[in-house]
Image (cartoon, rainbow, N blue to C red; front, side, top):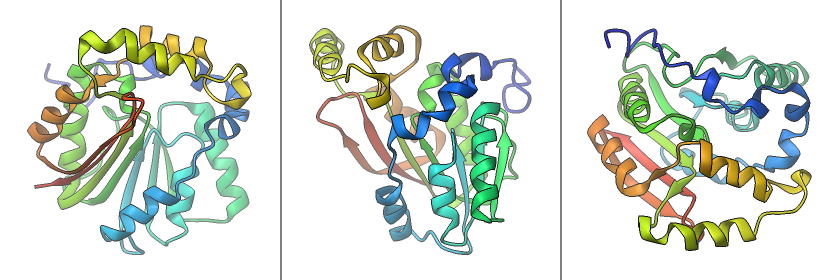
Amino acid sequence: MENVRGRTPFNELQYAGPEHLDPEYVVGYDHKARMDPGEDLALLRTRGLGPSSTVVDFGAGTGTFALAAAEFGCRVVAVDVSPAMLQALRAKLDRSGLANVEPVHAGFLSYEAPASTVDFVYTRNALHHLPDFWKAIALQRVAQMLRRGGVLLLRDLVYSFSPERADQVFRAWLAQAPPSPDDGWTREELETHIRTEFSTFNWLLEPMLERAGFAIEEAVHAPSQVFSKYVSRKV
């Protein structure tokens, strides 16, 4: 286990989901995800995000959040394990002319930043690719790179229900899935997530955050009980 905090034997690329490594899939990703970073950026600005800030975006994908954050003048490190995603991000950067975004091919367990040098960490729908043991390690690594008082904004597929309600919650979630993959994640894709990925119960994830050195300032669970948002500050 001596390599856990540095070069890790866990292969993050292997658990990224094969679709995220497929250049043809990545071409349509922005339309499928339909992500609007405005709400998250507004929240982070109330926490002090500005031109002097350093932001690390884990699971940056095609760079929707990273490029929007860079418009405020801050330094953004866009971290992703997928070469195809990073290629799409770099193409956007070339078109934008922004010089304050640094794409990095790495993940939660392999990206290295000096301790206490980062002001904000943002991650959306990426942490669930790690099993719980590695989530705990990842959150400790995030806390280590943040300055005291730094903010982690975490959005992810998090289960905020008790285990005995799993069938009921999943039936409702699957029932609302669009029939076409062009319009979002289909029933088949959601079923694959449930079977093969590592979404965590909120009552397991929250102690992980606190144990890593965070104070949870805001926790919002979606009505579906399968998505959550956490605003946490390093203590």
